Length: 88
Image (cartoon, rainbow, N blue to C red; front, side, top):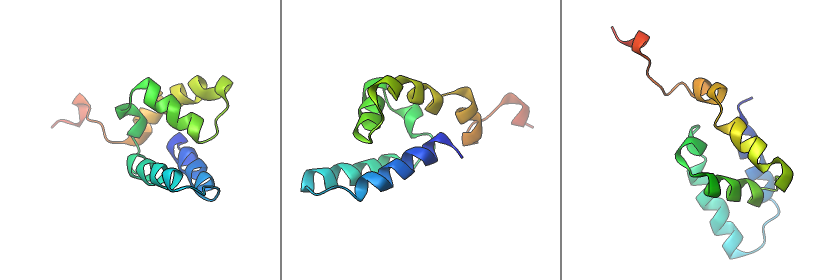
C-alpha cells in the first residue's frame, strides 16, 4: 500500500468524527488536495505536517511519516515521472 493511501484512510476515519462546519470544510479541502498521489511532493513541509497532525498523527511521528511520503520509493511508485531512458 502506498503511504498516500494510508493518509486517505486516516482522512476517511477523521471524516466520520467531525461535527462542525469548519471541520467539514477542512475535510473537503483535504479530499481535494489528496486526490493526487503526489500531493505531498507539492506541499511545503509546514503544510504537510499540519495535515498529518490534523489527521491524528502523533507529534513524535510527524516528520518520520512525512519523509516516508516524500521518499524516493513513493516518488517511483507514483509513476508520474519521466526518465531519460523513456525517451525514444
